[in-house]
Length: 555
Image (cartoon, rainbow, N blue to C red; front, side, top):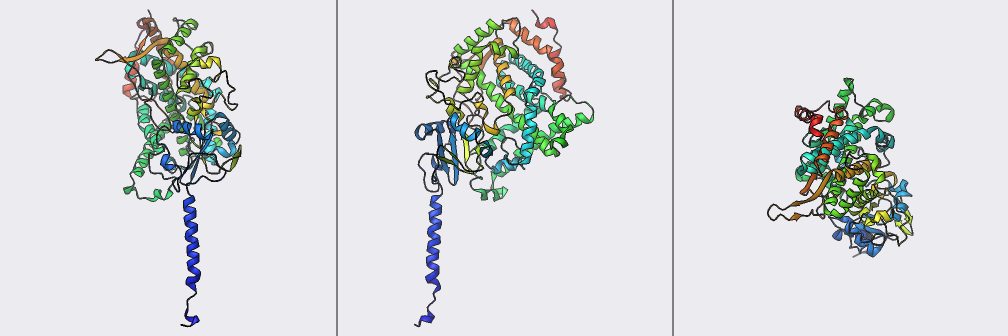
């Protein structure tokens, strides 16, 4: 065979193929590995990273356990994704607060974008988008301290109905709280309240919101964000796509209908001063030209009522589960307020133990234990550790509030800790210098804008509950023994909502019941401003309630 007949290509191609294969294998095996400079974390597996040990329930507890081993800043790898968990206030300060320009983004969410497109969700929308900034500015305007003072009368009126509801139908306490928080939100945003849990707006919200939150929950659907090609699977083979489509339809129907009610009211010259009326009338100057933006602006505020409900439901169950704390707070309230008038929002300043109890409820069970995750827009180095661009960052609020280095017996309910220190930490140790009063509400540019509304709602209702009612465990109908509420039974998602428990709520005396009823009648004028679009059934119910005479409620 002559040399000219030998094909030289295989001699060149085979080494190239071998090199390419080796490189591809090397690159593939590096997927899931912890890169140089990242914070420490549990050992990884090739490709999987930490996916095989990543929890699907109660992430905050597992994150706290890893923090004990690897430190306050922990990194995890889920395939090619990097997750950073901040388990200390200092970590939040250094990454979320001080570096908010690069840490205030949200992770991309294909599911969220399919439900609310074009970055029009204030909670999950990416920060670098003009639409998001417009929504944030408008929301901050509504939830400002100045506006809170404007709507304080609405809060008082809705709280008065909540007390009335609890005194008349205590078995439905869990649903009364849902009605209260949702109705208050729709009142200030849309000028449209709901007197019953079955009123259309509340009923529809309570149908849509759980579906929406479940769609965003980790593990609820296939990991489309990790494997983007999954989004191209035809709908007939992807049940999750049909569910997402349904959620979007329900979402648009609810908030579109609420917005239309405001527009119709304005056209008739029958405005009642709601926030959305102002937004519509000033839409052009505010950059809210499109109806879809207005619709989603209202939606994100109403969705915040879900967290408010969970917070109040947690408060009630803590009062039942820890009767000694309930007794001490009630004694303080009786001493300061007495039993001849109902409480006011201003009373809370004179009730240090009651304030401590409220703080302990939030520490013991923060209803948003991880908040919503942040995402890095550029590399940052903190204490020699790389926090890389694209990393998903969690604030482990629960872990920070249950850190035994700073909290004495953190798994016990001890309101007195907040009488010894403003943050409840042990007085014998130097506190984490990054701790701040509003840590519960997030950090950086993503901090919850509704702090004033949330605090006021919780405080006035806490004082009202303690002043008006005895809150006790339900009794077993067979044995007669008390059934303590299960404090470990709560939802596993963005919001750790306590499950409904049967409890006993009853007015402390006839005098208390009469004062509750009288206060409810006294706020009729305030409530009536926002009842122009009630159903016939709701109107009849209101008329029945308001036929009470003063003599029926006064002793």
